[in-house]
Length: 234
Image (cartoon, rainbow, N blue to C red; front, side):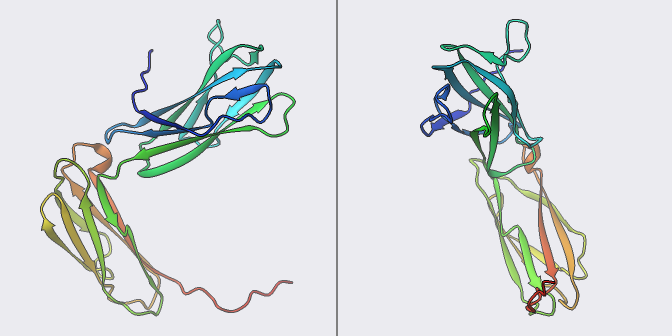
């Protein structure tokens, strides 16, 4: 299957190697994805110079990012590289669970090297619906004052809030107000009490055509007071 990578917008940084044998053009890649896109691809071209290299493994230590070593003639990962050969390490970033700017790293382990080479993959997922702040916090026993959440649409077309639902309205009652339909909303929330810790969640259902923005969530939390007493170390 052929995969196209139209969304790579910038290659940043000079590709200095950890050794003189495996040289990357750039060790940092930045990608902006479309609102409905769940996969971002990053390309890290390299060349082998001065000395042959063996790739032991490539790992991202995150299930969201899968590094791919170039394939050999038999369609298996090419691990042995000769001087003068060139290739491209690919990074497949699953963006479905993320919003905003996310940075992850790929580590390339080479035979005879104690430290891996680090490739940085930066992905920008536009927040079409901005909730600020996304979490409201009060301290246990503190003032139960009213807080305001601003909800704004950052898109070329309006996105309306169709419905809202809280799961703990007795402790966290709220009011949702339309400032400009499809573009700007305001949510006001004042806890009935801060006597004990608790949490509430408010779910907003929208008419966005993009699955990741059909439902947005914000939280309200009464958290325990942090102890000011010094910790005794035995």
